[in-house]
Length: 374
Figure (tube, rainbow, N blue to C red):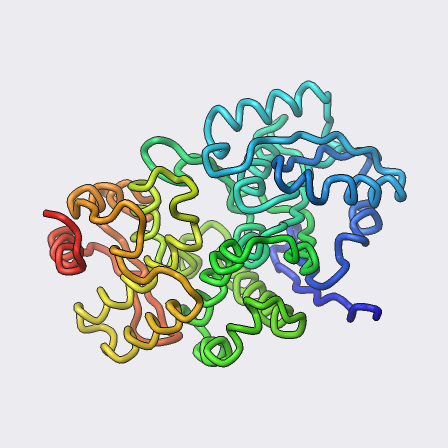
């Protein structure tokens, strides 16, 4: 059966505008869709060992049919690759290929590869074009869209980076067939985030159809990915550099990044799992602050738990954590200003807001009540 025509979501950024192409079989169109961005018919494809073993030969053959030479730059899988060392390695290998500004970098993988390759492209000869071909659900609905590129440091996640928009994003839903169920759940956390922060109707749709999304049913998956990308594209077009509304996309991330730091950015806690726990914590913290009805916090937590995602500190490997250490991690968060804590909190389902100057003692007391150590 011929797959339906892909959904195309524009990201309106003037001269830096681009399209996100979503659907089944989109990878098969990669050669045709990349050609308009190539002065020279060659690309450096940054991928990790896992993705390349699964899909590298297929992508190479597809691009070869369009006369595009592929130079693979393969990195180890995992968050640890998104580091100063990883950036130096990828940058050196791109330089060894003697790429010029008529060439193209392709990020072919999940969020780690997209962030790392995008940042390397941003600084290579002061900027070279790149294309995102995300291969995880999380990357398709979140990290591949919007131009945020970064690496992690021992002091925190994504603290060194640049805004560098891709020229194109190709989100092939068929590639998700090889994605482990745990990674699907992690990506689903970023999908449900869009319902929480600004579309209660989408949240209610996910309550009814979340299982179908996680089961990779094509119609449900297409709708979930496309709606998520539409919401992110709208926010990015309004606030590219995260000076205002785009900060809402960090719902759950302040708590989540602190948990990732405590667990070492490893396989023990995937980014989407950290965001899921962080969103549940953000809703319960909002309820303690009186900005959100307790019943909304309960409903948000139930929707997250229904997807098999963590909702409490005790659900995270390594718990219990020290409340003071978690608060210190939060003080290093990119959204913190002058040592003051900033959170994305909720007024209800589908309504998030930026809370600045949140007192550290209130967060500490909340974490202690949630089971953190004194």
